[in-house]
Length: 204
Image (tube, rainbow, N blue to C red; front, side, top):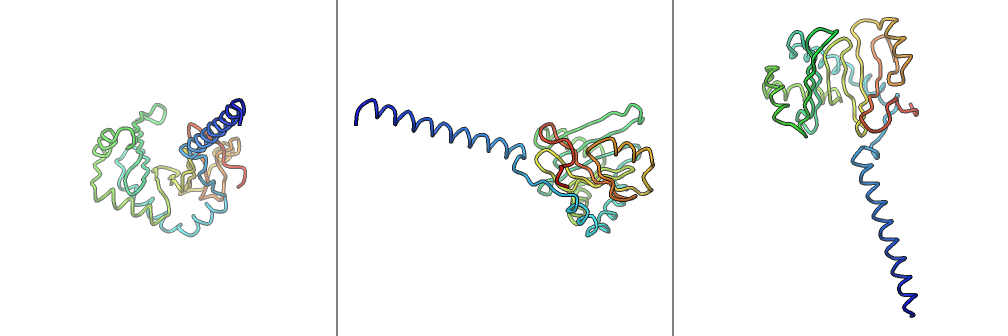
């Protein structure tokens, strides 16, 4: 075999190896950002809500007793522990926010939990009630918002109203692409993350 042919074969093999590595890296990044995560359909959310409605209503009532007056708190669980917490307080026109992720600032997250007066037993009970409702997150208020499932950095949620949705809010939802009005009680939502789709997937 000539030297030139050996060089050509070696060069071709190197190109193949580099290409395979690049493809693998792209897939790894996509998976990290949730590119390979499942999108959920409208029917999946509707079916889950119907199946777990009683448990969902129960965790909403329970959570309303946990959150201190004057605060709106969103908490998300992962593997049985609080993964993210957002505390909103102050006037609606100019509220203040405190946000912490366990993955980046566990100390700050624990500090927010302490400020809410939540015990380990209360947190465990909340997590169990959310799991029984087939949800991973909850936020008090009107509507109460329950995180159903994540897809990458995005979140599918149930907006659960205790009173019929106002016409102004219906118009607001209709102007956007993140909410689907299912009934006077339920609005489905998809909230995109910093990366990825921002609208409710088109395959609903």
